[in-house]
Amino acid sequence: MKMKFKVSQLNMIKDCGFLEIFLPFYVILSYYILPTVSSIGMLIIYMYVLVRIIKSILISNDVVYVNKLLLIFVVYAICTQPFIFMVYGGFNSSRLFNLFAIIMMFLVICVCTQKINLDAFFNVYLIVGFICSIAIIFQSLQLYVLGMKVYPIVLLPIDTSSWFNGGTRPCGFFPEPQAYATYILPLLYYQLKKHNLKWVVFFSISILFSTSSLGIIAVVLLFGYYLMSSNTNKVFKIGAIILGLAIFLVIRQTTVYDYAISKILDIDITNNTRLSHGFDVFNKLSFEQKVLGIGKNNLTYFLSEERIVLTDRVSILMRNSAYITSISDILVGFGVIGLLIYILFIVKQIITYDDKMFIFLLLVLSFAQTIFLNSAWIFWMVIYFNMIDIKSTDFYKIRIK
Picture (cartoon, rainbow, N blue to C red):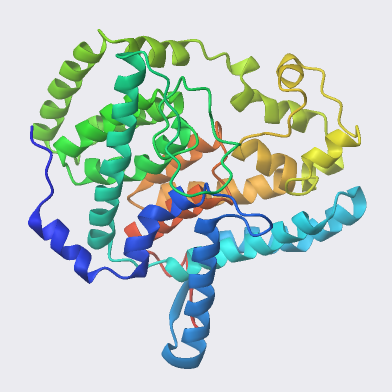
């Protein structure tokens, strides 16, 4: 099975606009954090959106599509967060920037909705994703075959001290394996949707080699969905099953399999840092705090002021870390009301649009990692809102003048 790019794929890059070229690099650049202004990736996309809006006002009268339920969430957040910080404390310049970031992320999604040439974008994404995947596979071979330590590949001279540096997991160009899996999953989804079996196999193998537990579970869910789907070509189903079994039998003999699968089998839901810590925090909140939340990213303040005292095993092991995953982060930061609005948005997408598995995967990832109001979330939402045929009942169509 030869891995090669079609001439048409390479030629189409000439016709790409800014978004088609930049977005595949956007998430990678977003892991390079800058002081006070988020990251390089976020700074560039913010500047692009502001320029686009100004240009539209002065020259082009651009059309923007605004998802109604996301708008409700943003309005709710902007209206309640200042009040919450006023009551509970913890407000500082960082919290002010959080409010600005919520607005800017929402504008990024609105401005980029229905603005991307999907074929051109996915051709660029395919090339970048291929390079990232090769790095993961190469590091896996170094680690599991040659016994060498491997470290993230740093592209820019910016502080990456928060990246995983244990030398025991393949990270490629990302701070941790999970970040790679989250980045590559939309590309795998698209290749499955287009029945490009060779790329499906390649990216599935690369996720397995990354040893990302959540990434591997997502691959299994994707395969299960498409193999059971009545719309999937029978020849593709048979080919996928045969290739999948062959790959499984080969990798079953390697240490990659032993490490990756053992990680999944050893997951203890009740004592897992990613899965349970945030809900333990939420249970410690008062009724009012559970309803409206304690403010985005305000958990560190609550812990430092001992307004929340965590005595569970996971919290003790984490030294009362403020790290929590997306669903519990929404619960803690925005309350039950905020989570209900967001879940309503997710359910609406699953019920209404064809790419329901894409948005379902986003929901699954949200339970075990941070993929909300950040660069990865924007990346997934922009791709999703350009894949679907949006309905006027779900979006406001606004012409910027």
